[in-house]
Image (cartoon, rainbow, N blue to C red; front, side, top):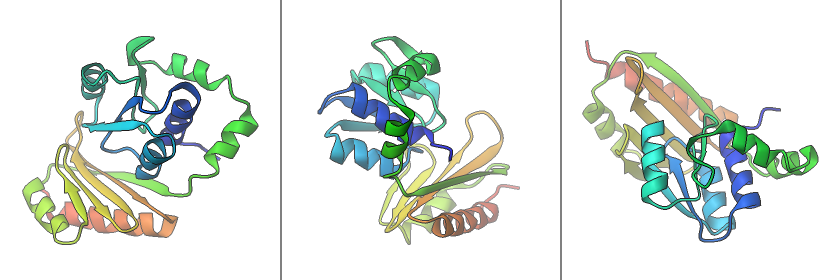
Length: 191
């Protein structure tokens, strides 16, 4: 079973940092893992935009001990203030496979993502989402929290695409949220 970047980040936090440490996560990060870092580990989480420049800027500005993105980029400034998979892997290697897989088994949510070619009217997307969401954040696209998960719709930083990420407490709900978000994005594409 593949173990995603947010679970790896939560494990690295648990194994290497103390309560009240400041952790920088991008807005696309799994809410289940974010809540574990905040609630179970007692760390302070700062959320920022997606992308290396935002991660590096914020981990340094906030005096964070680590920054993490769900795609497996980990920034640990005590080593080097940039994405460093080799150092993160070295830290991870100190754990036994059993210890790591047992840790990972507590995380149940499903995260799915897809990209839609083109550019979209984000004001229209935001208005549609605000009508149904519990919470909305527009720091990087439109992030919306619902009772059982979140949806993030954002413009790609590297291609003319709209990226959609959804997290829910079951695969079925995550796929349903992704299908609804994709339909919304397609209806808001600029011609």
